[in-house]
Image (cartoon, rainbow, N blue to C red; front, side, top):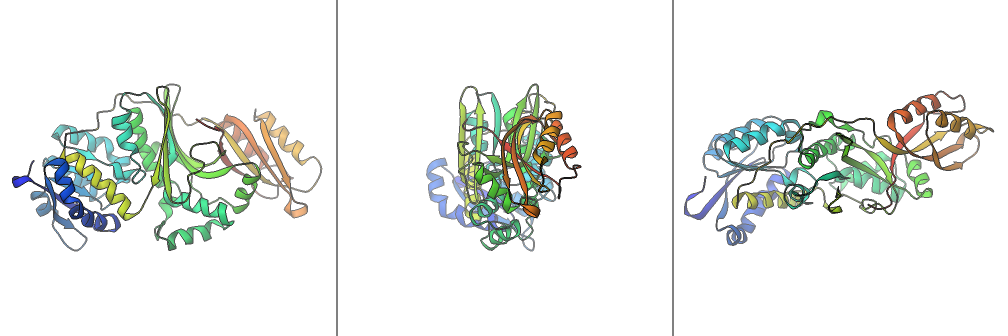
Length: 410
Protein backbone atom coordinates (compact mmCIF):
# COMPACT_ATOMS: atom_id res chain seq x y z
CA UNK A 1 0.00 0.00 0.00
CA UNK A 2 1.39 3.40 -1.01
CA UNK A 3 -0.12 6.60 0.31
CA UNK A 4 -1.39 9.31 -1.96
CA UNK A 5 0.40 12.60 -2.58
CA UNK A 6 3.86 11.24 -1.78
CA UNK A 7 3.03 10.62 1.89
CA UNK A 8 3.88 7.50 3.90
CA UNK A 9 1.74 7.16 7.02
CA UNK A 10 3.12 5.45 10.11
CA UNK A 11 0.95 4.22 12.98
CA UNK A 12 2.58 3.71 16.38
CA UNK A 13 1.41 1.19 18.98
CA UNK A 14 2.75 2.15 22.39
CA UNK A 15 3.91 5.46 23.84
CA UNK A 16 6.40 4.47 26.53
CA UNK A 17 10.10 5.34 26.58
CA UNK A 18 10.80 4.12 23.04
CA UNK A 19 7.38 4.99 21.58
CA UNK A 20 7.50 8.59 22.73
CA UNK A 21 11.10 8.95 21.52
CA UNK A 22 10.13 7.57 18.10
CA UNK A 23 7.06 9.83 17.86
CA UNK A 24 9.35 12.82 18.39
CA UNK A 25 12.11 11.58 16.06
CA UNK A 26 9.96 10.81 13.00
CA UNK A 27 8.79 14.38 12.29
CA UNK A 28 12.27 15.72 13.06
CA UNK A 29 13.74 13.51 10.32
CA UNK A 30 10.82 13.62 7.87
CA UNK A 31 12.47 16.01 5.40
CA UNK A 32 15.70 14.01 5.27
CA UNK A 33 13.76 10.75 4.85
CA UNK A 34 11.81 12.27 1.96
CA UNK A 35 15.09 13.07 0.19
CA UNK A 36 16.17 9.44 0.62
CA UNK A 37 12.95 7.64 -0.27
CA UNK A 38 10.87 10.11 -2.25
CA UNK A 39 8.09 9.74 0.34
CA UNK A 40 7.43 11.97 3.33
CA UNK A 41 6.61 10.01 6.50
CA UNK A 42 4.01 11.27 8.94
CA UNK A 43 2.40 9.91 12.08
CA UNK A 44 -1.10 8.60 11.40
CA UNK A 45 -1.94 7.89 15.04
CA UNK A 46 -0.58 6.64 18.36
CA UNK A 47 -2.21 3.89 20.41
CA UNK A 48 -1.76 4.26 24.16
CA UNK A 49 -3.38 2.47 27.08
CA UNK A 50 -6.00 5.20 27.34
CA UNK A 51 -6.28 6.70 23.86
CA UNK A 52 -6.52 5.63 20.26
CA UNK A 53 -8.15 2.84 18.27
CA UNK A 54 -6.08 0.13 16.64
CA UNK A 55 -8.64 -0.32 13.88
CA UNK A 56 -8.62 3.39 13.00
CA UNK A 57 -4.83 3.62 13.11
CA UNK A 58 -4.52 0.52 10.91
CA UNK A 59 -6.99 1.89 8.37
CA UNK A 60 -5.02 5.09 7.78
CA UNK A 61 -1.47 3.65 7.94
CA UNK A 62 0.98 2.20 5.44
CA UNK A 63 3.18 0.81 8.20
CA UNK A 64 2.64 -0.13 11.84
CA UNK A 65 5.37 0.30 14.48
CA UNK A 66 4.72 -2.07 17.41
CA UNK A 67 6.32 -0.85 20.66
CA UNK A 68 3.88 -2.09 23.30
CA UNK A 69 5.95 -5.18 24.16
CA UNK A 70 4.83 -8.52 25.58
CA UNK A 71 3.02 -11.29 23.73
CA UNK A 72 -0.59 -10.07 23.74
CA UNK A 73 -2.14 -7.99 22.30
CA UNK A 74 1.11 -7.40 20.36
CA UNK A 75 0.89 -10.69 18.45
CA UNK A 76 -2.72 -10.07 17.48
CA UNK A 77 -2.00 -6.51 16.31
CA UNK A 78 1.05 -7.51 14.27
CA UNK A 79 -0.76 -10.39 12.56
CA UNK A 80 -3.79 -8.24 11.77
CA UNK A 81 -1.61 -5.48 10.38
CA UNK A 82 0.31 -7.79 8.05
CA UNK A 83 -2.83 -9.57 6.90
CA UNK A 84 -4.22 -6.15 6.03
CA UNK A 85 -1.19 -5.59 3.79
CA UNK A 86 0.73 -3.28 6.11
CA UNK A 87 4.46 -3.40 6.76
CA UNK A 88 5.41 -3.84 10.43
CA UNK A 89 8.43 -2.70 12.44
CA UNK A 90 8.82 -4.06 15.98
CA UNK A 91 11.33 -3.97 18.83
CA UNK A 92 9.59 -6.87 20.60
CA UNK A 93 12.16 -9.64 21.23
CA UNK A 94 9.76 -11.68 23.37
CA UNK A 95 7.20 -11.75 20.56
CA UNK A 96 9.76 -12.84 17.97
CA UNK A 97 11.44 -15.44 20.20
CA UNK A 98 8.04 -17.06 20.93
CA UNK A 99 6.14 -16.58 17.64
CA UNK A 100 8.78 -15.64 15.05
CA UNK A 101 8.11 -18.49 12.62
CA UNK A 102 4.41 -17.71 12.50
CA UNK A 103 5.02 -14.00 11.98
CA UNK A 104 7.66 -14.43 9.27
CA UNK A 105 5.44 -16.91 7.44
CA UNK A 106 2.54 -14.44 7.38
CA UNK A 107 4.86 -11.63 6.22
CA UNK A 108 6.06 -13.77 3.31
CA UNK A 109 2.52 -14.87 2.43
CA UNK A 110 1.18 -11.31 2.44
CA UNK A 111 4.20 -9.80 0.65
CA UNK A 112 4.88 -7.30 3.43
CA UNK A 113 7.97 -6.51 5.45
CA UNK A 114 8.49 -7.41 9.11
CA UNK A 115 11.58 -5.61 10.38
CA UNK A 116 13.04 -5.89 13.88
CA UNK A 117 16.57 -4.47 14.12
CA UNK A 118 15.78 -2.76 17.43
CA UNK A 119 14.75 -6.08 19.04
CA UNK A 120 18.40 -7.09 19.55
CA UNK A 121 21.36 -5.04 20.81
CA UNK A 122 19.82 -1.56 20.45
CA UNK A 123 21.51 0.46 17.73
CA UNK A 124 24.08 -2.25 16.93
CA UNK A 125 23.04 -3.34 13.40
CA UNK A 126 23.67 -7.04 13.94
CA UNK A 127 20.41 -8.23 12.34
CA UNK A 128 20.97 -6.28 9.15
CA UNK A 129 24.57 -7.50 8.98
CA UNK A 130 23.56 -11.16 9.38
CA UNK A 131 20.61 -10.96 6.98
CA UNK A 132 22.21 -8.79 4.31
CA UNK A 133 25.95 -8.16 4.59
CA UNK A 134 26.82 -11.75 5.54
CA UNK A 135 24.10 -13.47 3.50
CA UNK A 136 26.80 -15.26 1.49
CA UNK A 137 28.76 -16.52 4.51
CA UNK A 138 28.27 -19.79 6.40
CA UNK A 139 28.18 -18.52 9.97
CA UNK A 140 29.72 -20.77 12.60
CA UNK A 141 29.15 -18.79 15.79
CA UNK A 142 27.40 -15.66 17.03
CA UNK A 143 28.09 -14.55 20.55
CA UNK A 144 28.08 -11.35 22.50
CA UNK A 145 26.86 -9.03 25.20
CA UNK A 146 23.22 -8.37 24.34
CA UNK A 147 21.90 -6.93 27.61
CA UNK A 148 23.11 -3.49 28.65
CA UNK A 149 21.62 -3.67 32.15
CA UNK A 150 23.67 -6.68 33.22
CA UNK A 151 26.80 -5.37 31.53
CA UNK A 152 26.53 -2.12 33.50
CA UNK A 153 25.98 -4.02 36.76
CA UNK A 154 28.99 -6.29 36.23
CA UNK A 155 31.14 -3.34 35.17
CA UNK A 156 30.23 -1.46 38.36
CA UNK A 157 30.82 -4.49 40.58
CA UNK A 158 34.29 -4.91 39.08
CA UNK A 159 35.11 -1.20 39.25
CA UNK A 160 33.89 -0.41 42.77
CA UNK A 161 33.71 -3.75 44.59
CA UNK A 162 29.97 -3.20 45.17
CA UNK A 163 27.54 -6.03 45.77
CA UNK A 164 25.10 -7.08 43.08
CA UNK A 165 22.25 -5.35 44.96
CA UNK A 166 24.14 -2.04 45.20
CA UNK A 167 25.18 -2.08 41.54
CA UNK A 168 21.59 -2.89 40.50
CA UNK A 169 20.31 0.06 42.55
CA UNK A 170 22.77 2.34 40.77
CA UNK A 171 21.65 0.99 37.39
CA UNK A 172 18.04 1.75 38.31
CA UNK A 173 18.94 5.24 39.50
CA UNK A 174 20.63 6.00 36.16
CA UNK A 175 17.80 4.51 34.10
CA UNK A 176 19.77 1.49 32.84
CA UNK A 177 17.51 -0.96 34.72
CA UNK A 178 13.74 -1.20 34.97
CA UNK A 179 11.87 -1.04 38.29
CA UNK A 180 11.39 -4.80 37.80
CA UNK A 181 14.75 -5.93 36.35
CA UNK A 182 14.08 -9.67 36.69
CA UNK A 183 14.11 -10.52 32.97
CA UNK A 184 17.42 -8.72 32.56
CA UNK A 185 19.32 -10.08 35.56
CA UNK A 186 18.08 -13.67 35.29
CA UNK A 187 19.12 -13.92 31.63
CA UNK A 188 15.68 -14.22 30.00
CA UNK A 189 16.01 -11.00 28.01
CA UNK A 190 19.34 -12.09 26.56
CA UNK A 191 17.92 -15.57 25.87
CA UNK A 192 15.12 -14.10 23.76
CA UNK A 193 17.63 -12.08 21.75
CA UNK A 194 19.90 -15.08 21.21
CA UNK A 195 16.93 -17.13 19.97
CA UNK A 196 16.35 -14.48 17.29
CA UNK A 197 20.01 -14.26 16.31
CA UNK A 198 20.33 -18.04 16.15
CA UNK A 199 17.26 -18.27 13.88
CA UNK A 200 18.71 -15.75 11.46
CA UNK A 201 22.32 -16.94 11.52
CA UNK A 202 21.62 -20.66 11.16
CA UNK A 203 18.30 -20.66 9.29
CA UNK A 204 16.67 -23.05 11.73
CA UNK A 205 13.65 -22.52 14.01
CA UNK A 206 14.76 -21.57 17.55
CA UNK A 207 12.21 -21.00 20.31
CA UNK A 208 13.21 -19.26 23.52
CA UNK A 209 12.37 -22.45 25.43
CA UNK A 210 15.32 -24.12 23.66
CA UNK A 211 17.80 -21.56 25.01
CA UNK A 212 19.55 -22.48 28.28
CA UNK A 213 20.12 -19.40 30.37
CA UNK A 214 21.62 -18.32 33.68
CA UNK A 215 21.65 -14.85 35.23
CA UNK A 216 24.03 -12.82 37.37
CA UNK A 217 22.15 -12.64 40.69
CA UNK A 218 24.57 -15.04 42.42
CA UNK A 219 27.77 -13.23 41.41
CA UNK A 220 29.76 -12.11 44.47
CA UNK A 221 32.30 -9.25 44.71
CA UNK A 222 35.05 -11.66 45.72
CA UNK A 223 34.52 -13.64 42.49
CA UNK A 224 35.51 -10.50 40.61
CA UNK A 225 38.38 -9.77 42.99
CA UNK A 226 39.92 -13.21 42.55
CA UNK A 227 39.29 -13.06 38.80
CA UNK A 228 41.41 -9.92 38.53
CA UNK A 229 44.32 -11.86 40.03
CA UNK A 230 43.81 -14.46 37.31
CA UNK A 231 43.61 -11.78 34.60
CA UNK A 232 39.89 -12.26 33.92
CA UNK A 233 36.87 -9.99 33.47
CA UNK A 234 33.20 -11.03 33.82
CA UNK A 235 30.40 -10.60 31.25
CA UNK A 236 26.95 -12.09 30.64
CA UNK A 237 27.53 -13.84 27.31
CA UNK A 238 25.00 -15.14 24.81
CA UNK A 239 26.25 -17.79 22.38
CA UNK A 240 24.77 -19.56 19.36
CA UNK A 241 27.13 -21.95 17.60
CA UNK A 242 27.31 -25.01 15.42
CA UNK A 243 28.45 -28.13 17.27
CA UNK A 244 28.77 -31.08 14.91
CA UNK A 245 25.45 -31.39 13.12
CA UNK A 246 23.59 -29.53 15.88
CA UNK A 247 23.21 -26.10 17.37
CA UNK A 248 23.88 -24.85 20.90
CA UNK A 249 22.19 -21.66 22.10
CA UNK A 250 22.90 -20.48 25.65
CA UNK A 251 23.29 -17.48 27.95
CA UNK A 252 25.45 -17.42 31.07
CA UNK A 253 28.03 -15.37 32.96
CA UNK A 254 31.54 -16.03 31.64
CA UNK A 255 35.03 -14.81 32.44
CA UNK A 256 37.05 -13.46 29.51
CA UNK A 257 40.77 -12.97 29.09
CA UNK A 258 41.85 -9.43 28.06
CA UNK A 259 42.55 -10.39 24.45
CA UNK A 260 38.93 -11.41 23.81
CA UNK A 261 37.10 -8.90 21.55
CA UNK A 262 34.24 -8.60 24.07
CA UNK A 263 36.43 -8.10 27.14
CA UNK A 264 36.73 -4.30 26.83
CA UNK A 265 32.99 -3.65 26.31
CA UNK A 266 31.85 -1.95 29.52
CA UNK A 267 28.92 -0.07 31.01
CA UNK A 268 25.52 -0.29 29.28
CA UNK A 269 27.06 -1.08 25.89
CA UNK A 270 26.28 -4.16 23.80
CA UNK A 271 28.59 -6.00 21.42
CA UNK A 272 28.12 -8.97 19.10
CA UNK A 273 30.80 -11.05 17.38
CA UNK A 274 29.99 -13.07 14.25
CA UNK A 275 32.44 -15.80 13.20
CA UNK A 276 32.75 -17.58 9.87
CA UNK A 277 35.58 -19.26 7.97
CA UNK A 278 35.12 -16.80 5.12
CA UNK A 279 35.26 -13.62 7.24
CA UNK A 280 37.15 -14.80 10.36
CA UNK A 281 35.26 -12.55 12.81
CA UNK A 282 33.39 -9.24 12.90
CA UNK A 283 32.61 -7.47 16.17
CA UNK A 284 29.98 -4.72 16.37
CA UNK A 285 29.34 -2.63 19.48
CA UNK A 286 27.28 0.34 20.62
CA UNK A 287 24.59 1.47 23.07
CA UNK A 288 22.27 -1.41 23.87
CA UNK A 289 19.36 0.45 25.42
CA UNK A 290 17.72 3.84 25.87
CA UNK A 291 14.70 5.51 24.31
CA UNK A 292 16.44 7.72 21.72
CA UNK A 293 18.91 4.99 20.73
CA UNK A 294 16.25 2.32 20.25
CA UNK A 295 13.97 4.80 18.48
CA UNK A 296 16.81 5.50 16.03
CA UNK A 297 17.06 1.78 15.22
CA UNK A 298 13.27 1.62 14.76
CA UNK A 299 13.38 4.58 12.40
CA UNK A 300 16.11 2.89 10.38
CA UNK A 301 13.78 -0.07 9.89
CA UNK A 302 10.94 2.24 8.85
CA UNK A 303 13.16 3.84 6.20
CA UNK A 304 14.23 0.40 4.93
CA UNK A 305 10.59 -0.67 4.68
CA UNK A 306 9.84 2.41 2.58
CA UNK A 307 12.35 1.42 -0.10
CA UNK A 308 12.57 -2.18 -1.45
CA UNK A 309 10.69 -5.24 -0.21
CA UNK A 310 12.53 -7.59 2.15
CA UNK A 311 11.56 -10.65 4.12
CA UNK A 312 12.95 -13.26 6.47
CA UNK A 313 13.23 -16.46 4.40
CA UNK A 314 11.74 -19.72 5.56
CA UNK A 315 13.95 -21.93 7.72
CA UNK A 316 16.23 -24.05 5.52
CA UNK A 317 16.45 -26.95 7.98
CA UNK A 318 15.91 -27.88 11.60
CA UNK A 319 19.12 -28.47 13.55
CA UNK A 320 19.08 -30.52 16.77
CA UNK A 321 19.85 -28.51 19.91
CA UNK A 322 23.09 -29.51 21.64
CA UNK A 323 23.21 -29.04 25.42
CA UNK A 324 26.42 -30.77 26.56
CA UNK A 325 29.21 -28.49 25.34
CA UNK A 326 32.89 -27.95 26.08
CA UNK A 327 33.71 -25.06 28.39
CA UNK A 328 36.40 -23.92 30.83
CA UNK A 329 35.36 -22.93 34.37
CA UNK A 330 36.34 -20.77 37.31
CA UNK A 331 35.75 -22.52 40.66
CA UNK A 332 35.46 -20.77 44.05
CA UNK A 333 35.68 -22.97 47.13
CA UNK A 334 35.43 -21.96 50.80
CA UNK A 335 37.50 -24.65 52.49
CA UNK A 336 38.84 -25.78 55.87
CA UNK A 337 42.28 -24.46 56.74
CA UNK A 338 44.07 -27.81 56.91
CA UNK A 339 46.64 -29.81 54.93
CA UNK A 340 45.56 -31.88 51.95
CA UNK A 341 42.54 -29.84 50.87
CA UNK A 342 43.90 -29.06 47.40
CA UNK A 343 44.87 -32.70 46.93
CA UNK A 344 41.33 -33.88 47.75
CA UNK A 345 39.79 -31.46 45.29
CA UNK A 346 42.36 -32.32 42.60
CA UNK A 347 41.64 -36.04 43.00
CA UNK A 348 37.92 -35.51 42.41
CA UNK A 349 38.56 -33.36 39.35
CA UNK A 350 40.99 -35.92 37.95
CA UNK A 351 38.46 -38.75 38.36
CA UNK A 352 36.08 -36.83 36.12
CA UNK A 353 38.70 -35.83 33.56
CA UNK A 354 38.85 -32.17 34.62
CA UNK A 355 42.30 -30.59 34.23
CA UNK A 356 43.40 -27.60 36.35
CA UNK A 357 44.93 -24.60 34.58
CA UNK A 358 45.66 -22.23 37.51
CA UNK A 359 45.12 -22.06 41.29
CA UNK A 360 44.99 -19.23 43.83
CA UNK A 361 44.95 -19.94 47.60
CA UNK A 362 44.02 -17.11 49.96
CA UNK A 363 43.16 -16.56 53.62
CA UNK A 364 43.47 -18.48 56.88
CA UNK A 365 40.99 -20.12 59.22
CA UNK A 366 37.41 -19.23 58.36
CA UNK A 367 38.66 -17.06 55.49
CA UNK A 368 40.46 -19.85 53.65
CA UNK A 369 39.63 -19.86 49.95
CA UNK A 370 40.66 -22.03 47.03
CA UNK A 371 40.10 -20.49 43.60
CA UNK A 372 41.03 -22.20 40.36
CA UNK A 373 40.45 -22.18 36.60
CA UNK A 374 40.09 -25.51 34.81
CA UNK A 375 40.61 -26.30 31.14
CA UNK A 376 37.73 -26.96 28.76
CA UNK A 377 35.70 -30.04 29.58
CA UNK A 378 32.22 -31.33 28.76
CA UNK A 379 29.74 -29.62 31.07
CA UNK A 380 28.26 -32.97 32.11
CA UNK A 381 31.66 -34.10 33.43
CA UNK A 382 32.23 -30.83 35.20
CA UNK A 383 28.81 -30.89 36.86
CA UNK A 384 29.44 -34.44 38.10
CA UNK A 385 32.77 -33.34 39.57
CA UNK A 386 31.20 -30.36 41.29
CA UNK A 387 28.48 -32.53 42.81
CA UNK A 388 31.16 -34.77 44.31
CA UNK A 389 33.26 -31.83 45.51
CA UNK A 390 30.20 -30.37 47.23
CA UNK A 391 30.08 -33.49 49.43
CA UNK A 392 33.67 -33.15 50.70
CA UNK A 393 33.91 -32.57 54.44
CA UNK A 394 36.56 -29.88 53.92
CA UNK A 395 34.06 -27.53 52.22
CA UNK A 396 32.45 -24.86 54.42
CA UNK A 397 29.92 -23.65 51.81
CA UNK A 398 28.50 -24.82 48.47
CA UNK A 399 31.03 -24.42 45.62
CA UNK A 400 30.56 -21.68 43.04
CA UNK A 401 31.41 -22.02 39.36
CA UNK A 402 31.40 -19.55 36.45
CA UNK A 403 32.27 -20.33 32.84
CA UNK A 404 35.46 -19.00 31.28
CA UNK A 405 35.92 -18.25 27.57
CA UNK A 406 39.50 -19.20 26.82
CA UNK A 407 39.99 -17.38 23.54
CA UNK A 408 42.67 -14.70 23.79
CA UNK A 409 41.63 -13.45 20.35
CA UNK A 410 39.42 -14.63 17.53
